[in-house]
Length: 157
Image (cartoon, rainbow, N blue to C red; front, side):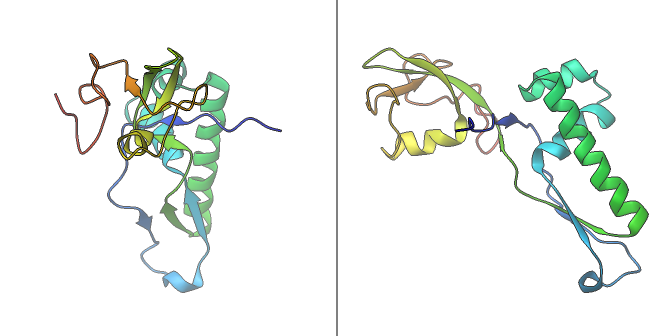
């Protein structure tokens, strides 16, 4: 059984998520779907001008994984420009932040997507080791979930 893919950390989700060539009707052309992590890779490498290793660190993936994500994004963009296809931005395997967490009952520590903390608050999430629902973010000092270092409707200090 293959392990689940690692979440890619992204800092930016674009507001505009669909691009269509000006002179072509949308229902008669092809479309490429760019994943959110592919847009993040383009942003970091091509707009922010960061080195590949820095980009990979920011997205919390290996350099090889970052390069693969970047190549996929560039191929889709080139195909859209050359062949006049639309670009839709959606989906992917990403998170806005990854937090170190601890189970208060068994002491197990792991990294978790911040989006799962809503499940923690609602009592729908538990420790994989002991099934306890007493889970905290280690960025906080005993609070149930991270407020200082995680993204949720903008950074909360």
